[in-house]
Image (cartoon, rainbow, N blue to C red; front, side, top):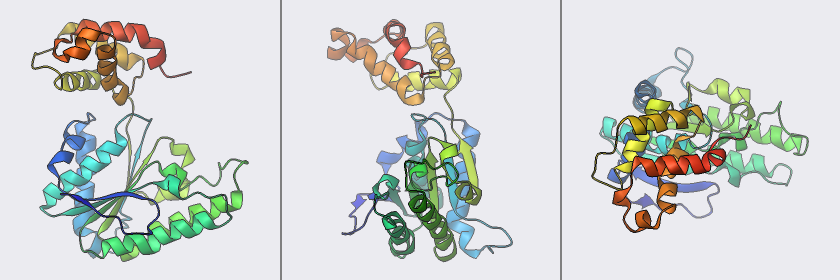
Length: 295
């Protein structure tokens, strides 16, 4: 499905896409995380989009909010889009995916953040939901929007932080009451930076950490398939995967390790199909200090 034009004058929306879209399938299939985690996410989203409107808020309080927490580079944002696309397939229905940029809202002007956030939840999202399609709203890096009121920096305006965060909480509650066809997926790179009242509203919080050796191996195999039809596997690749896992290399950097190996040799830049495990090992050895997270 093509992207849906963003209405003029709308703040904070990066994109609106009608799903399913075959081009989005990789966002689900090729993000390597625990299968049980994927099942929980998909089961919840299907349940929320299909049934939340007929469930009593007291009998079974469902806010329609999922939080994906974990370090940068672990696939949270990509997985959120893939989750919406897969849910559209499971429901055999079109789903509207709305990508919100929380960084568009903070302002140096007292109260402006609060007003902008309130417009998003009270007007923009309900207007989009009124189109009649199940809607998934991505709040990426939500710690920039639902800022922890107890941990706000003294360099920020504490009154504005409190007001903006309170506007988010009121907005999530408003959408939960008035727009049962909307489910939020929020991501955070720093869970302590998210206000505890926002987290308490979450129906599901999933931690996505650094990939273990098995996951790193699967990511390397998947990435190498982009470059060559040759079967590249074996004990050497598994040993490299174990070393990456020990160094806590995130999933994005695992894939980029293959790219950097290509950049290390002109022959591979000209013909990447010739890449070998030895190339990856040499690059890992040469860049290990940069790949390892700072302590």
